[in-house]
Image (cartoon, rainbow, N blue to C red; front, side):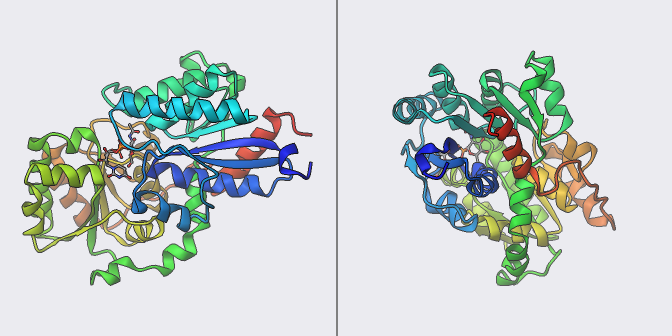
Length: 371
Ligand code: UD1
């Protein structure tokens, strides 16, 4: 099985920022296998240099083999365009397996396109449920998991949800959390980087904020309250806020930017690369976020995290980690509580150990009946 053509053709669908650190360890692990040819397919959902390219550089990924160039749009437009563009690729290439990750629109769209052509799909990060169908990601998760042929879960709750939804037990394989593989792969680099020093801040002496969920940033009233809360918190502790493009657009359109720019304790940044962002997570006092992945990274590292959402599809970060769900009106009190506490409990979560990519390679081997 030496020539690329004789190898199993495995498509890895990369689309949006949170996908890249899930694809990377798997790409590197598959690359070492003489039976596998991993092919990176970038849908183009995220296209800015600092939302996409810098992640490829940090994570040691080559340029995508295939680029669908889809870009932004409404949910139906974005999903539809990925389906149309990827279907053409699938018909031409007929890969042996399509691997989709996470819960973005491209994840669902690539799954539908492949399933309808009878091409096998594996979903990495399967089984997560917020039980909140107002979140576009929850719809994406439900559709993807209903169609996937192989479902890799990060934690036992994932297995339970899938079994309850009628997914056959033999399709489910618990592999752990792939993002921890990326974190451990780049730990040395992250520890050598010191973004907070660059900003003139001391380690442990700032709060890191990320916000991009439509429920927090698409409504002017909610976003205004959030800005006021950030300004207030920054009077006690420096606040670093790398701004997601969706959030920046809304802050500008709603005329809310001055609340932040006129607060001396607030540092506004462009979206950061993986290594630079993780360096800030390593060094901060605590995180305020509405991201999914950051709830997991902070739990793994033992950094307190306040999640500005009414629910989470990652409950293990609460039961075994450092994550707390937080309403807007509770933010300041919960932040105070973190500041007055001396220690944070750090637990080891089963299979969040940097070995997830190897377990997945093993699972693919079995699935594709590679001797
Ligand atoms: C998407 C995912 C979300 C994930 C998030 C991480 C869906 C439904 N949402 O949300 O689950 O947590 O990515 O970032 O798939 N934009 C740019 N440059 C880019 C990308 C986006 O300027 O490279 C702007 C555009 O104005 C675009 C908006 O951001 O309309 C939203 O982008 P989109 O990919 O639709 O959703 P996200 O909010 O990023």
